[in-house]
Length: 124
Image (tube, rainbow, N blue to C red; front, side):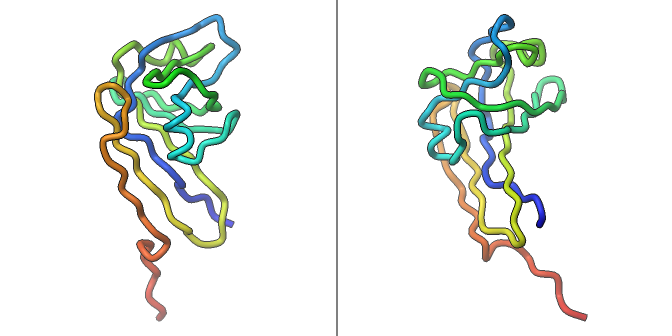
């Protein structure tokens, strides 16, 4: 089995922080559905402003809002741009999507990469 990207949210803006929460990242349910992210699924994040990388789990939150909870609240500031990935373990790449977001965390564009997009290594 290999680990492949299944979805990427590009341009996610931090709208809130909740240090007292037990931990996680709150995402709009519509984004979770489009990216096929399940509640409590592990997600990998990168803060473009600081370069800090971490993983946590996703939970549903209000539409348009992206909130860093618990210790993750110390890893970003309101307005920071975050990249978020999900992964899956498969024998072969089965496709992925990149969801581009606007300033209000609304979907601006979705690029889909089907399994045929993966490059096979040539046989010797």
